Image (cartoon, rainbow, N blue to C red; front, side, top):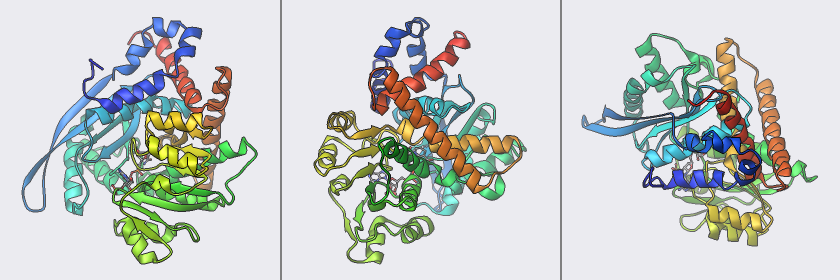
Length: 435
Ligand code: NDP
């Protein structure tokens, strides 16, 4: 804490992982002897830069850009870029730290990193977004590359932004280096299923949790927070597997649509095409759908909760509501959406809890599949890629459960994910020496 003052989200993420590691450090003291814990907490490299750009009125604007290259023991740094006004070093470091273990859990050769800017894309014109992305890449390009560091999207960075970033990288370097960014469009080096991967992946993980207990998604009520990339495709996969998503949200409030469940076609049109709000959805859909501008989406009764918006969006009061309403599974689509107090309350009440670093790893795993396709100048079918994603999520689920069993905490996905991710990356760090 003294070494990284004020970075509260980073402290929270570190504490959450290290709280799980007691047993592993007793069993394998060589990790601590080799300074693995201290080395893991210190990013290999942190880059902070100025991003100047000109808005539509001709005014010069200045934002701050970040890229934290956290750990490359397993492969090139890999992790998204977030454009949101709440971004500062503590947020990027928490995300980068989590990414190390998440990427290790996928079993694919990728290290951990994260980046972004305090730029707020909301209400900005297409031209402003393009000029911002070009300026951002004009600094970032010298630090990234297909064998070095491979950014992707996150909050506020989707296909449009990746296109502008890739275009500027190509222009500056005079290289068509497809593997430098993932989340690209299908016609210029992208992978099938990447857009859907995080949302689909979290639902595949939920399916594994249910299957392990002799159940399935059929007929289950589900609440998904957010209505961005992860949320939309989580809703889609829940519906495909027979469940019913009855509520979703954005930062303005939440919508409940309990009749046939959320109408995804309408939601996609409002969010994707018009960049609108969930309040517009409620208005267009009409009764019985309704919009709530205050209060918490977690008050809506549900069997399964999938938070897909942002960090610390589900607190101990929300956990109490979920428990009181009979929720049996919480699976994190977002990164660190549940507070430590909420996780404690859910776990001690017997609610199965899947942490983001396991449950939302499908996005980065499919990014690694995109890198594989770029390296071999190949492109796979939707069916083949989705099957690979489902297999990867099954593997992560098994790894979490068997590790939790091994350490005497059956069914504890937090402990299983933290220990399995840690030992994978720690073993590689040991093999590479003190670097
Ligand atoms: P998007 O920008 O596409 O969507 C974010 C959504 O969350 C928006 O609907 C946004 O609403 C909503 N939101 C943000 N803050 C709040 C809030 N305080 N309360 C309610 N809703 C809120 O981002 P993504 O879907 O890509 O990312 C969502 C989460 O998933 C993040 O935690 C991200 O790190 C994580 N993640 C994303 C991956 C990916 O592949 N994209 C991979 C793994 C994790 P509004 O428009 O009003 O801001």
